[in-house]
Length: 293
Image (cartoon, rainbow, N blue to C red; front, side, top):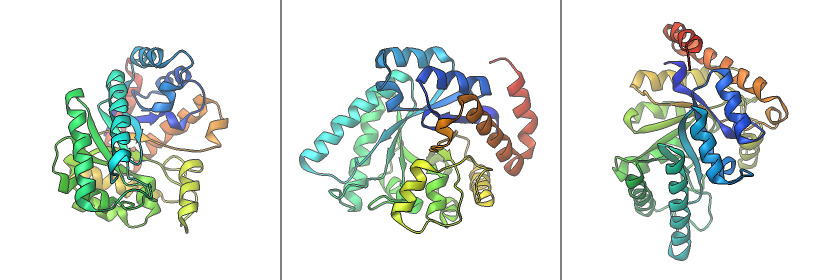
């Protein structure tokens, strides 16, 4: 585990894309997870946004997020396939190695396993010519797949090299007990890990889960599930996971803070994780931080 294994999601910061990229790099991060809104919403257009990302020197962790894709039929399915193609093309232009897709919340989507598997296999095939992979994430309020075990059942059944999992610590903790699921997952099929925590012990309703996820997450080390977050990362590391960790922290308070302050909190979280999970990596973290970028 090294500093270069960690990055931040642009969703975590307020302000224009260029300011976000500069703040991340100044704090010592070397990679960035990009939200589509930061790219297509750029005042000078997506071509300029792509150029700024490529000029930043930050490695792109991935591109997000495709929603409500699987389980649809007819014209709804065709519409979502068209959206997916557009997002894949944009992700490819950004140099993103993967596209994040969240489990569907649509009332029009079937939960029939074979239909879901077929749709995600199709998406994975569309990504192949672009050199991208697809990471499937179980939203904790997903209509049919709202637990990590359910997302893994889909990925395992699909048996496609280009389709894997995104493990999100918030959604795992919000549904309680999902940390144990990691023991049954092939670490080679975990394509991305997103890290965050929250400030109360339990979430009692779907509505509270959505509100917390979108407005009140905090960095690991700042919440009340420290042991579980550390255990999640520890199990991933012990299983052989060697991929990226990205901080996806939706927080309305952070959105009102200077970017440098938020990035400093994120870097403190990196060292907190290293201290709890892999103390042996602390010298590496200091070495990389001090070295040239």
